Amino acid sequence: MAKLGPAGYSPYPVSVVEGVLTPPPGKALMFNEIVDEEVAMREAAKAMLTRENPTIFPGPQVLYAWNEEAKRKAKFVRKMAEVLGAKIIPMYDYRPKYPKIDPEKEINPNHPNLTIWHNKIKACIFIGVHCHYANVALKIIRAETDCFTIAMCSMAGHEDAMITLRDQHSEDLEKFIRIAEEVKRELGK
Amino acid sequence: MPEQVKTEKVKYNRMGQRIVSPDYLLFEAPRTKHFITGSEAVKEAAKRASVDASISYPITPQSEAAHMLGELWREGYIGVYFRGESEFGVMSEVAGCAMAGARTITTTSGPGTLRAMELFPMWAGSRLPIQLVLMARGINSPLSIQPDNLEIYFLLDTGCMVWHAETAQELFDMIIAGFVVAEQPDVHVPIITAIDGFFISHTREAVYLPPQDIALPPYDPYKAPMPPIDMEMPPGRFMRDPFVMKSNYISYATHASWQFEVRAAIERSRPYAKHYLRGLVEHFGDPEGEILFIASGTAAAQAKEATQILIHEEGIKARVLRIKTIRPFPTEEVREAVKGAKYIFIPEFNVIGWLEREVKRALYGYTDIPIFGTPRVGGGMTMPPEFIVQEVLRIIGKEVKHVG
Image (cartoon, rainbow over all chains, first blue to last red; front, side, top):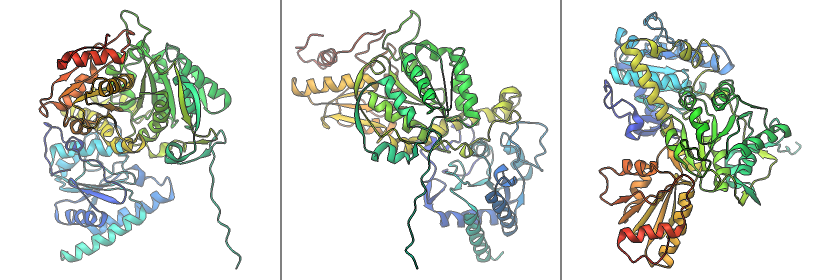
């Protein structure tokens, strides 16, 4: 994605309109550039460590212990939150239920900006969210907020996030945590 | 220490076919020559695609292909097969199969396409990688059961990918590639593989087929961008109690974002389609041709014949840009190809000229080269190469020697 929002709705904040696609295997997407994964991980960590109210939004694929990999990932998500000093607001339920949602307790992919607006979240990580819902939510967030979005996806990634890391499995989360710890030290935090 | 024996894990599908990679099946496996119809090519492709379910309803000219898919079920290659109540029923039922995690294929033609129209955007919005083989025949009224591809236009903005094959060989390869591309997690939208009915469905041609004891890896629904079927989750929930029914700004924004996401998914198919189709377009003829035909399907085949006549009998440099994928539309490839052309001709087997509209949209503000949406035939009319040549010569002001 070329730049931070809010991008408005005209033209709609959809990065494929600008020719930006998901990164190839082994690479990451940072704004509209294909970069090495480590470069993107450092910038993602920096955004989470320096912007206001960093938050991790874990989805069902790491919230539910449906396989061993999910359990491992869930532990790393908790560790990641500790290192980054981030809150965790789950996205466990995709059902549209406005206005019943409590945006402080959960984020709904169909109206994610309620959560982002309410808590003034300026940086976030999507992890374990089914790809379609991540993509729908990321477009709305970019349209209406200046939140710096980071997607950690076990599949092909999400070009509507400011940084997307693809094929992220538990060993990659471990690597990200190591890099985040380094960046934290460099920032003197 | 004994020498370790290298072992290879071989996997087989339900029918006992050996599972191979899509690249091996499409590009590397040895092929043998067969003289078959387009309908038979559908059967041969489905046979090698580890298909879980197929549902059919008869309508000319796709009835034979649907019948042959039933034979595959009898032989054990397809897990579930039955006849639906109507095209609307069929397209609803294949959606159910796909939501439950099945690789699904169906076929239709002409008015059947329009009868089922409501379901195609529903497939796309539900991110179901269903394959529809469309054997185009035109639509009513008046009733037509002749070659005409008008209905392809109706499908272009349903949120489905739309590919247009020129030959039975290409249809065979596109059906296999179609499943592979449509099921990519970042794509995961329906694929419509279209041909011009009768011309391809009912005529025989040489088709090179890989062995029938190998097949695509089965579909993995756990990589789907949505959770599996659940009436408390979309698509059930968004059909039953949809957020679009809420009259508030955020519901509108959600619906807009959802629709954009489906279109974005089609755009993400480009690199995969480029790989498995060996490009979104094909170039034919003199690379320096001043006469450029842009065409798809059998109109491209006729344009190629016309190009040969122009080059060899008229001494006019000509070429063809054949469009393989209508959605995603190969905008960059078209812009690149028009460089050096003096005239662009777009021959079509329909009266509205849907490809002409697509090309003009891609080239708007980009070139001043005159674009002629001709020849254009419909309702079953043929388009002999001589007729195309005659139109070209008339428009560029040359003597017309060929009689159309």
